[in-house]
Image (cartoon, rainbow, N blue to C red):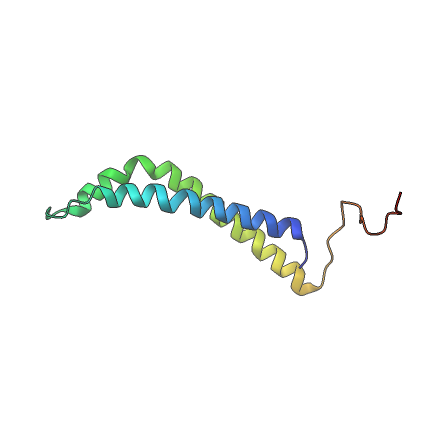
Length: 95
């Protein structure tokens, strides 16, 4: 793995994107579909209209996470090593 930090960013970006998109927008659209109505598509579109901006936000988060994942995988395949920014606590002397 090239960068653990990029892996963590990938995880959180995609988790927030999917976690924001799926339960809120889909549940709101599904809850508005009446069982006996002949035109459930129109009511579900009307119900999901306010969530369009949240869907855009979630989509941006998911795509950004995928780009970070692709970069991390590409650098790992090349055999690159990330610069270590935190000290290695195993090499510090015991006090």
